[in-house]
Length: 212
Image (cartoon, rainbow, N blue to C red; front, side, top):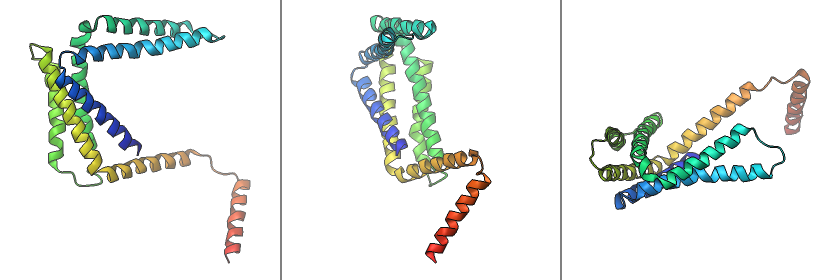
């Protein structure tokens, strides 16, 4: 169930970002950079406030890194255009990873159910779009942003289709992973002592006698 929830959340976020990039290709990237700046500032400020209220102080290196996080966040907010070109490359890399991720997911599903070759077409296109954006042959970032938006929407749709069509198989995969982890934990546990083994044997014998 966790895999399904993560997948749906990821798809919805990608769908929203994709639509915004298509509708507002010039403005959205700048606001995304500014939003990332806020994500750097907020944790840094929270740490400094908590650190100020604590009696026992943390190592100075942690405080310096928090201050650096705040300063970098303000830099992103005050000069978003400076980071836009870099930001497009970051989104291109995310598309490449998204394409690889979907291809690997469909490949994993083949161990449990038949997956036609058609399911690999759109992930391959997403991967190709990411590579094209990283090559950055465009004169304006607006075209790159539209390609990123379309690719994000395609990724979201394919992911939602994958979750809806193969949700039973995904749940089975998740359960098999849990079973393997439990088995590994059990195998790492120390063997019971003779006294504990004797108690377990007595309890099993007692249960058998009651059943008889």
